[in-house]
Amino acid sequence: SAAEKCGYSHFMLKEIMEQPEAVRKTISPRLVNREIVLEELNDAKELMKNISRIYIVACGSAYHVGMVGKYAWEKLLHIPVEACLASEFRYSEPLLGESSLVIVISQSGETLDSMAALREAKRKGSKVLSIVNVMGSSIARESDYVLYTWAGPEIAVATTKAYTTQMVLLLMLGNYLTKQLNRIEQDEYAAIIRELQSLPEKISVILNNLEHYQKTAANYFNHNSIFYIGRNLDYALGLEGSLKLKEKSLSNIVEVKSRGAEVIALTTELTVNQIGSQASEMFVIPKTHLLLQPVLGVIPLQLFAYYVALNRGCDIDKPRNLAKSVTVE
Ligand code: G6P
Image (cartoon, rainbow, N blue to C red; front, side, top):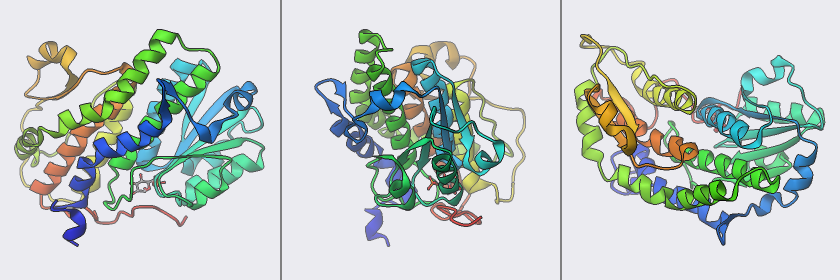
């Protein structure tokens, strides 16, 4: 109902705007005296002693979080990390056993493929840690360890605040494990903690500029195709930006063909001058630690997708042929 949307025209926009608070709720109980404290995982040192390989398993947007996790965690932990689509996991003969740790990421905690991957991992003797939003969900109940993203209920089919909180938590977890294993420099660790603390504020800075995304979307909503280009962490971010847009606009009839390609650049304050001359439009995010950039970077892409969908008259909160979670095979 309109009341539940708190004056917003769609749940998606409401949930985008709730991100500073959702991210704060996810981070702040876990930052104690400038240390990351994960009470859910108090035997981390013991757990990590024999781990030589990590699988991050998820579907849809949560899989994109996993891809960011792969890049970040390998940099931090120096052990092989693979991001796997849950629907492929069982069929790819993963190297499961006591020396593998499996991380399952799921907003609903009910996605069937993710659940099946979890069971397979446990059957083969791997420990499973899940990052879940819905308390008491199936995946949460069957995992050895659960970290909750305190995003609150997410109603719009296209995920926004669950996605950013999953990303924050996965990055916190990676840094926590690295610290437990004494594999991180104190300066680097302190910098990450500082930047974690300022994330909610930096997200608000982006959200204070809605008109810019509204205007840009109005200029581009009728283009035939939009390509998201990026490397490494930004490759995963590009996939998520593209998915956000497709969730709403794929089924639309294209009214106007694009002429030559134009460039919208997503960049940080640092490189804004270099990039500015090349691009028709810019989405600028505040400067932060490199590993935390994807958390801020996704927000302009969510807003752009939202306003493009609005211009195209799409059913934003319940896109055609899509389900919030897929609980059947
Ligand atoms: C479906 C939804 C996606 C979602 C994915 C994973 O495919 O359409 O938006 O990202 O499931 O859902 P989960 O609840 O496991 O995060």
